[in-house]
Length: 353
Image 1 (cartoon, rainbow, N blue to C red):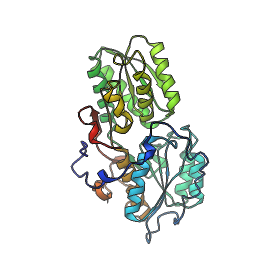
Image 2 (cartoon, helix red, strand yellow):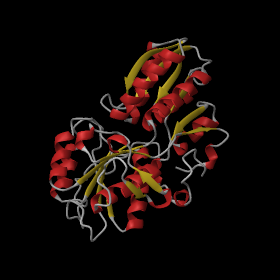
Image 3 (tube, one colour):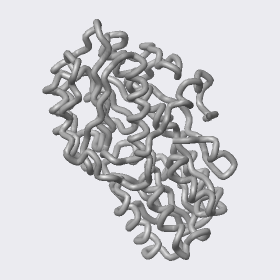
Image 4 (cartoon, rainbow, N blue to C red):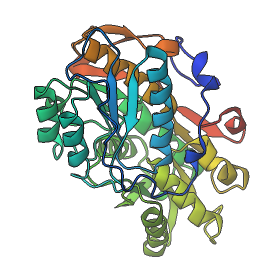
């Protein structure tokens, strides 16, 4: 693997196997999971005599993106001898993660790693966890900073937004109507990227008109239906940006069998394994993403460093994340994984996640 990330990278994670959970469908697996296994070995607040017990709470279960992050977190935990457990809701609604946070707190897990469905709706539950001695790491989608110790960001927000705008502009000749198919309306990361994309379009692409933003709620069928609705509502639409792995795959599936294939461009954020067939059949020219396995891997090491007391989350704190190398905590408790990679027909077969 040769992602365009800073020079500290690569060796070990290329060998982490991504499981069959990276299928396109949003399975209902784990619907009955209540988080009962998350706390084994934890003492709450980071017992320095043993590696951390970590509860991973994604936006929703059955999401290929978070299945990959879970694979990375599991691998990292195995390296430092900790206990990593994934639990979470089946739907990515604002307060659906609260019960799982509460359960992890009651079980005195050392650290919670969470991708927030809402910046404030889970804040009280996370603060109760921190008051009980549990370290809180947000990843992928942040809460308000007051509710967590660290945020592991997949990439610089400006870079993510600019990459997607540059791709759609190139694919539609820098002119015409475009729309955005997002995840949940309250998703912190999605909204930050959309704001930046809107600014970029206005300032640098005056002939591109953003005509609509719709929400698929990180649900495959909803995203599929929203794609159909966009094409019906905007017959002159030339492009769709979907900054969510579930959304872009669902949109590609719709376009691949519609009259809009080859006429309406689609780009955004997706995994190579999801999008390979749509690149090869001409539905999609290019898209981007970071490695979600590495995001989970880095988040696990960050959580362990917090729980052990190696770092506190203050700017300037340093820790080592296994094969990814050394990281420094930035302003506002943010740790950045690296830059996104653009995937197209020339390189997509070089990646397996």
